[in-house]
Image (cartoon, rainbow, N blue to C red; front, side, top):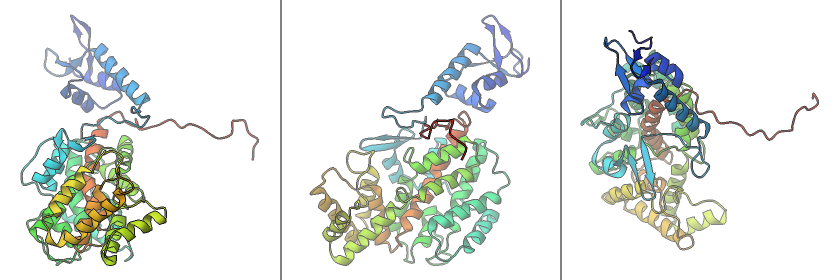
Length: 419
């Protein structure tokens, strides 16, 4: 018997891998993924040339998948998506079950990315930009107007790298990971250098990114803070940009297109711009000699105080707590750190439930290291690209086009007269 036919056993008729895949509406490779997760059991045929499955078990899994797809809501009526990547609790978060802050504090960005992608932690991991996509990305970025922002450059670099990769439509895990390990360094190395040209250090991504963010001479403690920020920001469950990535991946868009969807959502003022606003607030507080008048101006204008509050954490954002602790070791960060704490204290006098979030901590880093206001967006986007790839990898293993909500029509009831 080959893998295209069923076999007859004492327990009744069994079905082949291809038949199981058709019942489940997935690729044959996904059937074996179900087996590896313990959701299906397979049996080798007597000749050893294929696998067979219990049709009742396959149908049960198909019904469960259909139920979950038909009712994709959480307990609060929000969209819920299966994921094994990030778990967020009221005071901490985890990457594949491991405390994310502890992981990011002990390992550089590249190793944390590998953990999120593969569940393994290869020591000394490095990402290298291949010459052809890097050259294409640099040409495309160089052609942009001078006033272009960091997200403009990153989106264009992503599109250029995609065109230079003829294998981008291969959605196998191995191919997607290969693209990811190339795309992330391309995004960094395609950005114009503002630091010492040619300074590369040991090749880590944080070191290369530093020269794109500030003209200052790097020092080990500041680089460690930047690397920590990158690792902490790799993923944070289904933020708006991550959901956009999963929608694109659900339609089997290639990984570059999925990342482009995430960058597009990040452009929104409610998602990616928070770090820029917090940076400017801290700069103004330092210029005016205190945070109280700056906070007062925000409140008087009816604006939210940037860098405060997070809907997923009851107290201080654990990412902010970790980054603040690292920044305390930087002498040059002391003024910005004091200003950030004054912002929190001033606001807490009237609104005690508001705590610092990672945008405020990232602003302390960017202000104290001589980076521009948009540097936080760059750090966030580069860091989160690894998380977007991890979510795309998961979504490629799911039923295609499952991210299809049903519209609730609120227009005039037909028939209406022809306009």
